[in-house]
Structures are given as C-alpha cells and as structure tokens.
Length: 248
Image (cartoon, rainbow, N blue to C red; front, top):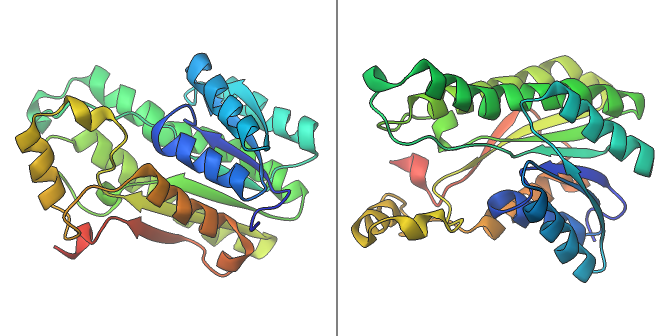
C-alpha cells in the first residue's frame, strides 16, 4: 500500500473525480477526510470507503468559505495528529458562454470556487504541513490550465491560476518539505456527459488522440502516485492526464 497511514483530505469528494481519488487513497491505506458541500454524497463516499475497510470521516465544506476550509484542516489534525496530503479537487464547470456575454455573477461564481477555493484551502493546509515538517498538495487543474476552449473563459482563467498557485507553493516551500503538483485532466466521463447529445459526446471523444474521454479512476491513479513517496522529486509540475489531448 503506497499511502499506508497517510493523513489525507480530498475536497469535492462526493462524486466524480473527487470520489474516485478518495476511494483510491483509502485502497492504498490512507486515512481520508471526505469534504464536500453535498452532505449526502459525501457520506456515501465515506460509506464506500468503510466497505473497503478504510478509515474516513465526512466534513461539510464549502470551499469558498475560509471558515469551512480551516475547520476541515483542524478536523484532520485533531483526528489524526496532522495532515500529509491535501487534494484540492472541488470545482464547478460553467455553461459555455461567449466571453462578451459572460455576466460578472457567472465570472465570480467560477473564480470563487475553482480558484479562490484552492487558495483558501492552501492557506490553511500549508501551516499544518509545515508544522509536521512537510506534505503534499495536489491541485486539480485541467487541460485548460494550458490551453483555451471556446465558451469557457472563467474556467480557463481559474485553471491557469490554479497552476500558478502550485508553482508558487513549490517555489516558496520546497526547501521546507512541501511538494505541490497540478493534475491536468482532459474531458472525463463523470456521468454528466450522459446528458449530452450523442454527436456531442462523439466529438469530445474524437478530440482526444486516445479516441475517448477519460475515466475518473484514471485521474485517481495519477493522484495516488503523486501523493506517494515515489513522486518525491516531482514539485511545481503540471501533470497531464489527458489521453494526448495537448499534443494537438
């Protein structure tokens, strides 16, 4: 088990990529704080971890709330004595909207969750890790941390910013035992794509040289490796999990 006894937290762990990461961490021996704004979904993830024989608890967490972020980290430290790995995964995807038609409300909603939510998490995760002599912060970016996509200006801006935070963490804290990595998925089959027209799904599949969208478990496997000791010299990096998307 590559993460045996690691004390971890995963935001947005109630479904999709976040749930897959939480389950993968537990399967590798980690203790997992499951954080989500959806209590029922988060508790379901905890139950699934329990079914694996793992140890987990749920913490209601709105990542836009500094109080919630602090409470989450405090709960991990109280429960397990420290924090080793934080995966800042929670995010929202906006409706596709041409830039000139984006409202300030839409802009702030996406930036608040997808960018400020990461910052607020890091703000409280870092002191806990520094107190213990080190730790790993994984920030969920996207292929849109590297390129643009029609109609997704707020998301693109947020995900570019997330990678900037990752680089700053590595630059400022690597010497104190902190690693930070951005994970960059392409389009992932989280279940939301089921609402798309078949032609749209086929087009999204075709945009990946692999010929398909990815699965949450494929992102989770990367998150397991990056959280483990085998990734000890990977810091400040952007790691794509994109089926070759960025080669085009």
